[in-house]
Length: 117
Image (cartoon, rainbow, N blue to C red; front, side):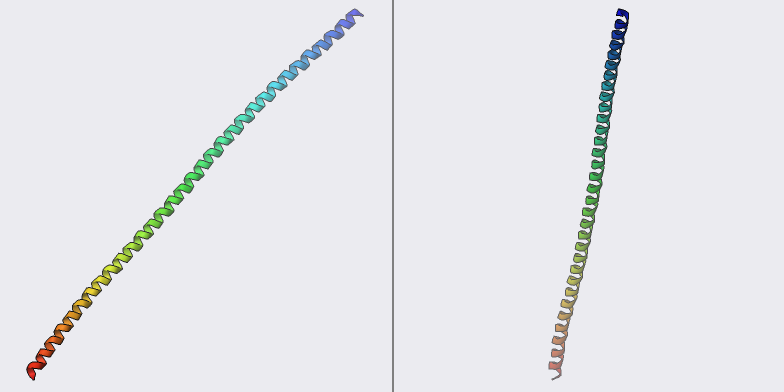
């Protein structure tokens, strides 16, 4: 009977040790899983930050392109305005010269008419 009791206690102790080992292994496995999960979360966070930086750079580049295009359009408009002003100034010179020539011709005509009289 004592032998049976000792064997029974020995079995119970073995079961406890196995249960304790299983608990320890499960705990290690959970810690490892948590660590892996944290690494994945960290990697995902890094990827998200990289993607955000990439998107921000794309947006920045597009904004710079838009500004450059606006600046070019503004410069082209200014060139057209200057060209029109130059043409207008040239036309005004020609008109002024023609008006002066007309005055001279009128004066000559008057003098010619006066001489004929």
